[in-house]
Image (tube, rainbow, N blue to C red; front, side):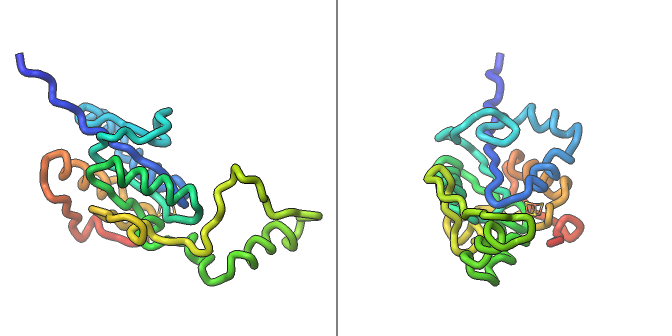
Length: 183
Ligand code: SF4
């Protein structure tokens, strides 16, 4: 009797993302069952696992970096995952959240917590439990090495499926024109 093939461990996370890339991942629909014959999810918003396992095969990152916690989680994924994938526009170039880079952080916090309509006696949150925001939003490749990029906001389920099945088959992932988009 041959031993069952070991499943690849896949961890995912959303940093400064909107969870739309994860939703697009779930859009592979019933193919998720096929995928689960070959992979098991590690730390992910889809599981209750709190830490990335040290022997993770693939890490999938949605979202750019907007605060200190994002940087910590990203470094942890890089340390523990053999392959790291930037999923979606936010992870690749900061995405729409990086529009805030046009304004100083203090101006944004003042606007949101002090002066915007509906806020009276607002205070900028100052609890040590809260991660400090970064001055600017950054793409993840500015902090760690990324192995593959899947563009799109969000990338299509077909593109995600293609990259994962290529990796599972030991092929270099390749997105054709139909799967390559940035919107
Ligand atoms: S790339 Fe688009 S869908 Fe993905 S996290 Fe960013 S805003 Fe959301």
